[in-house]
Length: 159
Length: 169
Image (cartoon, chains in turn orange, purple):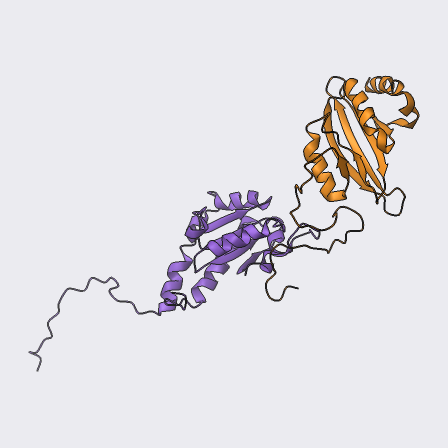
């Protein structure tokens, strides 16, 4: 039944329909970087009223390198949709979804500090889990796991 | 010659009236039974801390049952759980606010060495920022291991020097 709902949503996608597949009961849409905001606006009008999360994937070695992933949920149809968009390392900009979903603000802050994605329109991208002065993006693949940035000087005998 | 009897002042009761000891042993004996822990509890080891604090294991036997939530009233800092770099300044501040004499217990694998974490966020052992007296291994430690740690700390307190007058005093 959820597949029928997703097929109907997919048929209404128009130009994006050929980039959309249903995978493991989730509708997956590959969107162009600039087209995320109108696509999500359309999805919200189709009943996807809950913003689940935004995160990113670092495809090190590929171009464009970073992929931003959003998940939305429909509380009426009980189905999920996933939207993906690729951004380059040099210009990791996507549109903020705060105008559509207020709950996106915190998750965009986290995605910004962990992957360095810049969300156009979100004016509060201060560190959320990290601290002021942290250099780099720790969840990118080229951040070494041994790289620590302690706030307190270590005692004698420790580095 | 037998007429001269030394008068007895009072009848002997059989109880101790005088004991002789050393100052460090006496102070150490007193201090080891009045540990007031400050629980700096950050992670899942908290469950095991609750277990060891509750009735079946009864840390009150060691005089270490009553947690003080002010560092100024406590003398044992129990670091229970993972400490990350963002929390490290808070832990150091709590430690510095405690009055001498003070001891630190690293409770569990994460507080001891960072546990299975090695990443941008985790402090790899609290001994990097505060001196630690007792390390308790385990993820999480069994209550018996915590009690063993408390007893080891008591031994340490009983056998260390306890200067009454210090330079700072």
